[in-house]
Length: 170
Image (cartoon, rainbow, N blue to C red; front, top):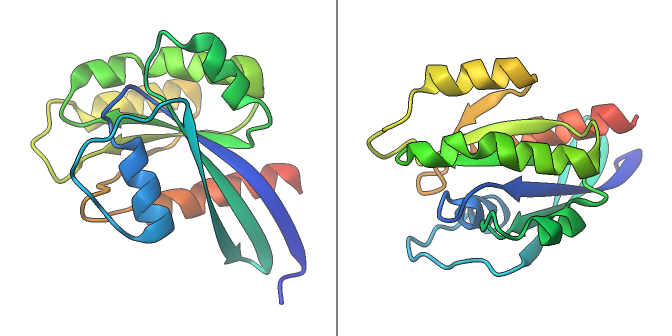
């Protein structure tokens, strides 16, 4: 039986169609659907994870990917313990917009940890992992390659972020 219990909010940030909803679906339900469904507003999913004798209810907020909704995004970021900044390996512009997403998040959430996810690792790449890692090093964020379609590294990304969020609140 876990000795500690946490309820933590994690946000997924990034442009539309980078795979945020698919990452959440893969993590929470271990499922994938390649039909694109645009998220409106935000969708919240919950998954309970246990590690190191700690039970964590992760409240995963899938934030709409329209950059024009910055004031709405700020409301969604309040109370977040961490965030994934998600870009798409097949679209360079999604990487180029990450700093704007991250700045918006940090302006509300303060020092909450951020992990950069480069999604769609199963597809042909138009983005250099070295460039993403250099950006991650510059802002102090780890970088993880994932594929929501195959499930590669999705569980690992959430596990690592959970460790970082709990470590900051202990």
